[in-house]
Image 1 (cartoon, rainbow, N blue to C red):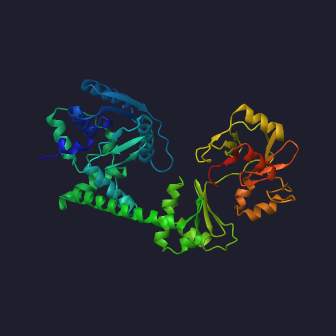
Image 2 (tube, helix red, strand yellow):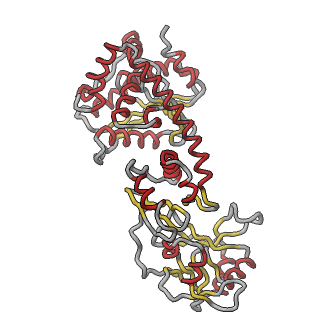
Image 3 (cartoon, rainbow, N blue to C red):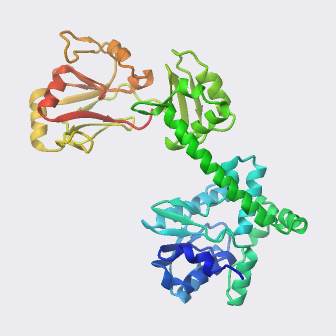
Length: 451
């Protein structure tokens, strides 16, 4: 007995479904099957992405519109620009398509795609040939979080032959994209040359590859859970963008690399190339405690300072001669993308604090400090901290603060109209500003993105 469509689509019952509809055989069969079972769904609509890569793409879009109209399904079409970035046209088209799906998907909705068991077998082979580990060999997941909702691939255990039989039985019409026959593309070469040879010798090749993908995905999940636990043990208190060098060195090299990969993903940084982990070990983790060594790759950088490894995004630096005049209202945007503002104590602390915006607050601020001035460090600044009788050089205060050197250089300085230094970011507050903030139930906050 064939499981498609009833048993295969049962997990979608009760959900609001958005089908990614290309017009090809696979998505056409899935569209028809979902339409036949729409009473069991909380909603059903479709989206077609026109990549504008083929002369007939507009005609294909029109075909999708007509097919959905005949079935009474609302279809949204999106035309995207595919920008080649060196990874290949297929990867660029996939990224553009997924971005369009994210833009269309509603909160709580499930995006359903028609990849099947044959597609899964191709993906496993492609990733194996590219040297993927267990995470990559897990290939396509049957379901995961996506955008504001979920992404589901209910056909991963369904062979394409079942979809073709279904489409013929119901006299469906679909698009045949001629580029799918071009064996210049790696996936098409596997589809038309490699997999047929494997099936001739091992008839269950597709099922075996799909099973391997499922087992690899399970292993990857277990490894990710353990990596998360070990990552927690390497964290520094109150420093989400820093890890303990000592704790990292206690891990074996493979576990250290896996923990760092999990950390990079958590910080929103691009993954480090495999060769980069050897450089991290040699140039950062083995560096002297007083080192300021840096390792960079596109979109990311790591710094070693004392017993900490700091993650962030590369910065090109900003002009050192900028200056902002401020009345204390709202958030003040600074050249490096950070913001300065006064937050109000909600009565339960600052956990859910909101920036002060009331006129009375600004009047009191102006009355006691005059127009505020914000600028970067120039050198020679002095500040009187709470509990001290004299002013001290800011350079020495920052050295004692434990703040990394690059963070010290980025600190915005807040001055009163009479020239007194009131704050260095929100790390160091002068006694005068701290006393005033306590009276007015507020605090100065410097919001910055990354290191």
